[in-house]
Image (cartoon, rainbow, N blue to C red; front, side, top):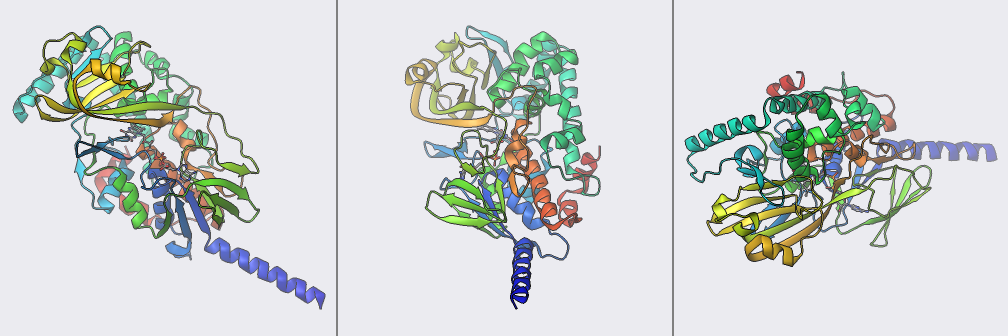
Length: 492
Ligand SMILES: Cc1cc2nc3c(=O)[nH]c(=O)nc-3n(C[C@H](O)[C@H](O)[C@H](O)COP(=O)(O)OP(=O)(O)OC[C@H]3O[C@@H](n4cnc5c(N)ncnc54)[C@H](O)[C@@H]3O)c2cc1C
């Protein structure tokens, strides 16, 4: 009798386990592009014989809004991107989300190719492109052509070498858009980078990589430095891969989403049948064997068969039991200061505001108090909205020197991206050998909206394949996502 009871209990346990595995609860921590796209890919990729909506997905966000580092700021009633602002023309996941969610593309006015640029060394502009305020598109084209020639005169053919370095890297990155038949699922970031031929770029600094391809020291000290300072708040001693991504973010064809990039996260969350828990921070994660217990600031507990962390862990205090071990990593803080007012030409040794370039970049010098100043909007000749990036907070006394008029100032201190340090050491995607995942392990390769989506896509496949065994996931979503033109590029 007792043996029959034992068999029934075993069968019941097996039934419950297979039930929970076929319709597991997946808990995602973080509602930025990583968390929202992970939810989206989990819903889009269904394992065979299982409907896509089988999993229950819970998404936790400590803030009252979704989007994370995709956020806007409103200054004097106008809204601008406060964090992640630009997308590359070959950011195919972002492009696909935009189409899927019926969002509108916008060409930001701050792309380097369309702006007058000045490189400031603290005393003078060491390089300045032509500033021409006539907004006739034909005249603008001529000015842009003249500026290209002007750049060529200063930096020579090194400019082409720089572009080719970026192009080679971008083409390798495009491998992550290949179909499932030719693209494996990766358990580690190292493996994922090695497969695309990108790993070696994380073992050297950008400076070393660029010297290897014979870039002139002047170009590295000036233009390249300006770009890495704007995009990652760091010098050319960041890793080669982060550097190449940063350089790619200064080319042509850049875009953003009308009304704010955060709408990608909100749109993906809305269409993915998710239980969204806003204002709920996860404080601790206990591995109970078959599931994880998550405890939140609201005093609630959640049981999840799968837990995915979609936020950098570096400045968080989530308590893990048993403890997890990941390489120590610092975040680079970028202070974004938004000012409605007018720059002071005297600060730059100039007579008039119109002589100040629309984008002021800086070289590497510890005494320089800012990395860049750019015009976000020209309301009229004496009233503009600016964005200042700096490594330290900008005190009022300093801003009063740089600006002659300051109607409104908003400051944001971002724990912005990893402090890149070659050779990079990567945390694993699977933190405990079971079902605890870390999407932002990939951020040590490069930090962008697209790289977060690429990492999330891989983690979604990893979760499904590890839950349901070695299954070939439906590729219908992936294959139909990109237009023929895009796939053609991806195969290049
Ligand atoms: C100033 C700045 C400029 C940038 N510019 C660009 C750019 O132009 N182009 C580009 O592609 N990228 C840019 N980036 C980088 C880009 O923003 C990031 O790589 C990307 O947005 C990261 O998304 P994520 O979802 O991985 O992380 P995040 O967006 O940081 O999302 C993580 C979320 O998790 C939440 N969270 C954290 N801990 C908990 C917890 N315990 N419980 C619940 N919720 C939690 C956070 O509140 C956050 O909402 C920029 C970043 C900054 C800061």
